[in-house]
Image (tube, rainbow, N blue to C red; front, side, top):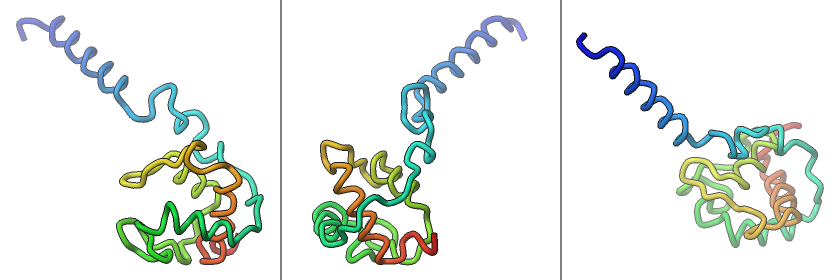
Length: 123
């Protein structure tokens, strides 16, 4: 090994670059509380509004709550906090729906609608 200092400096630089480019680095909401930041009971019982919002924003990937481009939403048994996080931050191919696209009231109405599908299981 003729240049150990150069090798170490290169490894440190690559590590710093990889950390700086990671999706969960400082400043992302995923690292600032994750699912816990979305905890709390569903605050709406407005299933009708939730169905309209779902039809507008979600149905093209989850047709009728079934598997389409996105997964089946019936009887999956996830926690509402995880659903809030997925909706707000996106996940994989699912886009994020921030407050400028779906208000907090609309989000809670969607959760009320999803509850009718058994999305949250027995909570």
